[in-house]
Image (cartoon, rainbow, N blue to C red; front, side, top):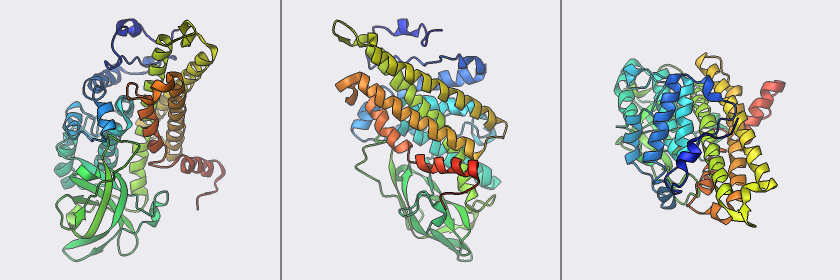
Length: 407
């Protein structure tokens, strides 16, 4: 079977700015998808081609977060697709959610970060651990893109060890008093609310919903990033913030609560990184057929074919990992360790594909005329956030040996 479809012929002659992306499917994985899943993917792919890829290079070059995309994400169903429809979500399965993340990150990792934070790290904990009143109050606005949310776990001195957090709150009788700070928070500068994890007076971790406008709550923006430049990143600072008691998430406490949210987000990342890899591969394949050296396309040279063959192989393996993990998620059987394997493998794979694709593009690979360098820089953040490459390795090592090497 050919690695690519007849879309190649249909897309020939289009400019490189028209997004002539062709999705690789060497193992006919489409045959494993339902009609609804394919429809969801097609819808989001069309959205990305219309609303993201024509503009993303300019947004990234200018380090501009296009806030107008938030409402558009809501309208297309990218926020909280697995949340029940009664709360504004899509009521979709996890494979559909994964395909949405794949398509958005094919456009840009920063755009996918915006969507996955909203769905997996803000809407998910409110739905899973929140009261019915909290669900009704916040989820429809978040799903529609009327409000943007962020997730406050990482601190300046506590990244891979979130249990050491210093952010804390006290019971003041009719409210809680919250103090501390969070760092490297996607969406923070524009967020209308934050799901914040903090310790009570007994040292137990709880989730609190903190709304913009609460006195003492500020969100300084992080500047001078070389990665995720079209995403907005910042801090969360809490200086004696009075949080109403009804804003405490009552359903679950302890470190396991935010880690459950991270499992959902890491699952989405495993699909998203795959999308970035697919985009780099497709761009390199097309470029190799167009670029002439020594009187023939560079695609005719063995070393270029080797790179393309290895890219396709690794992408195909990652597609199968994602599909199987999605089935396990839908069955409620996926483990943290299985999610760690997928996140770690797929992001590392995507980085390797991006670097090899950059080589095929030669000097043109560093320009905004092609998506490769932008994907590569973005993936340098993705490989670190929501569990670094090495921490996920140790999670797997602990599962294999029963010995926690990170303690």
